[in-house]
Image (tube, rainbow over all chains, first blue to last red):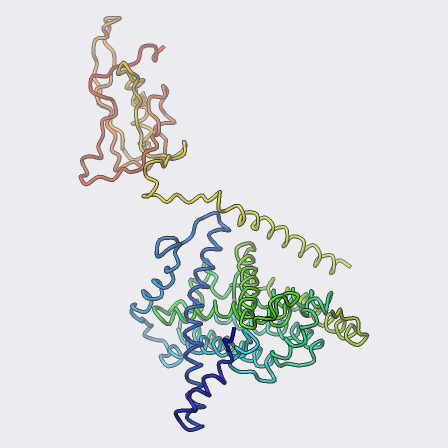
Length: 354
Length: 158
Ligand code: SF4
Ligand code: SF4
């Protein structure tokens, strides 16, 4: 097998035969941007389909099964419908911000995707502050939500957006701190190196007790950060209509919707990279075939996505005060204790290495 | 200490909930409750308590149990039932007696509340489970429940 997935260098080499160095650089960036855009537009749609199927199975239903074999084209058809719909707006809305908001949300979630190593080579952008970049980028999305809620000039949208602000800012802390706990073991923020470290055992095994606690905290806080049930007061239907995107229609609504699912994928992908060894196969069984890494990466990520869907279809929605109690009284103190525990374990060399 | 106790209890209850839904997820392939209606039209059977329309069962001698007492007509909150009756000579006793002529039921007005069936002292009317009740002409929704030439089942009035 000689398929090389090192896309950046491959495309760069291909382009630099035809044009100057600077043009080839820009050409590479544009090509990769389009590849990622295409992959994740489709991936987002299929995540929506997966969610609907999984929801149906949890509720003893069948789920979409009419469009295409097994309903596989259902979300494609939905997207086509949304594209063809009229973009309505309110008269008193702040037009500029109103139109800008969906792009904030979708662009920030697409930007985060660039740094993930899908295999050893398939990684668009390997910066040395990978995790920091992810945490920073994922908090830009909330600006889009706040803008959308504010500019809609609608009380439901505004309340939804404010709740989203409260929630995301609170839980950002837990996400960051639980990732920091793991960084204590890896000693680096660069995602490709974090995976190198895990060649001696996935971090959830290496760090044993504090790693498991960090993983649990991360999954709870991650679910809250994507505004998914049971933390979806942002769009609590019974109280707020559709929450911050009440006034959006057609493709702009679809951007918000798609961004939610891509964010879910991102949260799961971070967890895969940090806790479950990214593209590494269990016990190195397929190390000889590098491109199978993508299979392992996606497999683990989809398992974690399934876990988040499981949360969604099991737990009832929290109240705002319960949400804040959970974060500030439970997750945050536990997280701080956990960091100390992890630091002790790393200091005393108690990690499990194979 | 109750702080950590709370955390333990919280995690335990969350896992209990997830195991319940997890079981549903695994068994959902067999136990799906969705009816794929137009496809399984031939063998779709509605459950017993389904309220399709009010019917009056007749036995093989074309006899029903309706005495024409009009209790159902009175019980119906929206005037769906009309009983047309007259006094006729009872062939057995030779006395004049109230007898039903037509039991008219307007399906288009019925809200399926079931009060008429509750009210009937002789259990002459009951629910049918058919559900494909739409027609192209409104007059078809007005039904005469007793079949032509039918008469009261003997022994009902005793
Ligand atoms: S079910 Fe209710 S509405 Fe219908 S005929 Fe009987 S009493 Fe009237
Ligand atoms: S259907 Fe029952 S309640 Fe109605 S008139 Fe006949 S016997 Fe009386």
